[in-house]
Image (cartoon, rainbow, N blue to C red; front, side):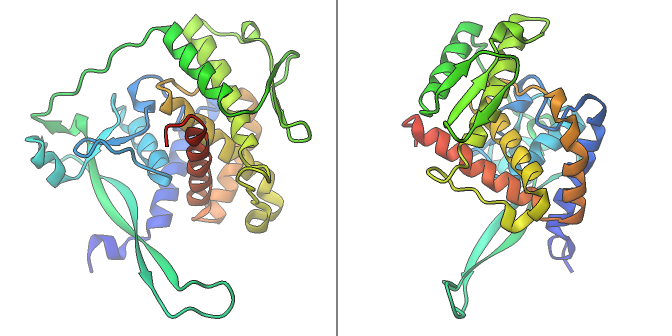
Length: 293
């Protein structure tokens, strides 16, 4: 029996993410809360394509665990194609891809299409010799702020500044945010990233209403739907920040959700896959509003 066929992919991925979440519980710091290049959307070094869905979360968790400074990945053969060599003894990281096939449709809305999860194994750029990292320019704060402001504005969800709490109000379809000056941070960049992390989290909630993605988690998660919606919004905000080249920041008020998230993930090995997929859909909707896709 091969390594892939004997592996419970959903359980292996869930265990990795649970361990990463547990390691940051004290500071409410999740795998997607790391400053620097590791918070960019993970990309394949050979193709330049970004990884999607659950693989974003998994590779962020791997980067956190191993302290990799850059989120570029490739299979053993892909690194060889790039003229690089994976160092002896390096441990590969699991990513998941899906193969589609068709069966005889059953009754109802069944279209006969099925997908099966398959494993692939990748190595980080820090695990290879003979590869020169591409230069990544250090963008000034004003450029990051301008890009983030434009990204948020193009979503078409009004942002109301005022008060001391951040929230999304479905009845008025508005995001409510405190003034950025109320965010306590050691540097102007950190304060800006704090503010946009929260704003894009709330924008993540806005993607789920009926006129947009009509996200209904209650059918799957029942009483846990609210905390799962928070996880989807948290992942959406982190993915959007990475898309903008900024670092998502921890939210201390989310400490109350962490125990619930861990409970759901331990009870349902496919829960994090669902949350990551819904976050990927939300990010896709956001990017579409920018005219980028």
